[in-house]
Length: 242
Image (cartoon, rainbow, N blue to C red; front, side, top):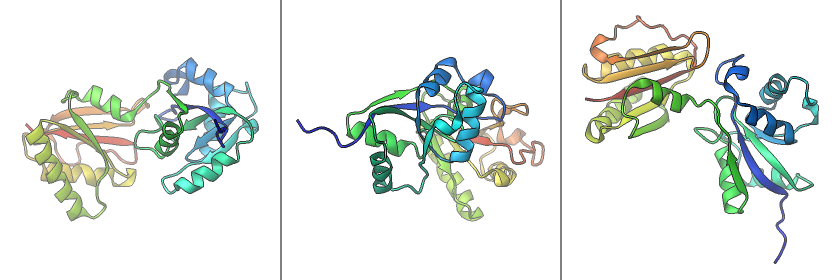
């Protein structure tokens, strides 16, 4: 049997902190120990990843010893293949997202898909996920829910999409979650309050695990525009039409 033309033996999914300065509290030891054993990392942003490694491992290894390959939403299959070819000796590799768990609403899924196609073992490690934490804390349907990523930037298209998801939520009794670019958070909240039916349950999770964490779920009828200022805090939006 021909030998494989790549040197990746195992792919570890390495969670990152959600809020700055929370690694000690939310990143388990198994993640730190695994990270210590690796030398090749795929990541969204090399600078952010080096800083994270330095914080988590606290001088136990030189950050400069890591070989980092940037894997972004614009990385193609061909570019990933070329990166993999640069790995000269058999080794385990890791994937680190800029925040939270890699592979979930994250370009790391490209390498995970490659691993499965090439019979390379994938090992997910535990850590904070804004999606799962939001579902857990919402009090809404956690048996059936969907994460829809970003909604359209155009306001009219965004409001139209909100109504579409609200209809899906009502028909399927399914909680709908999505995110927004932080500087548009407050406009998104205003749109939800204006567009959704008054009985729809709206949940907002801002700065999860952080010092300014704020999680609120209540009917749209009880939300008042401007009563919750999100600012640029990372925020998960969700609703369940009832």
